Image: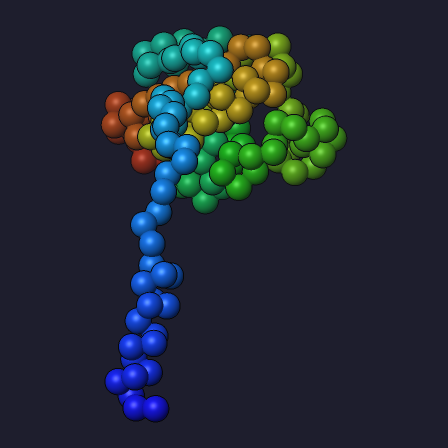
Length: 160
């Protein structure tokens, strides 16, 4: 058997194997809307001026990492690093105190979150709402705004 003869025999097999696909059920795409920011509800927002008259019953929480907090913080703020400890608000009271060095904020107290530029504080505020906190607020200007308006490079926060 020559090579040409073998090639002729193989051709019909290739032609049979290659066929056009048929569509029995056409695919209809489903169009859905998607948003990356799913807010449970809107939170109260403080600006620099209103933060100056923050009620003494409110708890100011800096959600930046401890190294950022030690470099400077708004006076009276407590450090609760939300990026490295997102489960913090779920912890039992005694474990919270052991881990962060201050009492866990009561769910009926106003908690005001800030970070460096407002992104982490917005996430922390939504997390607090999910955990059942009733009075949640944000300082969207955060540390960047505070430093710009006070011309202070460092404040006196409380270490975690």
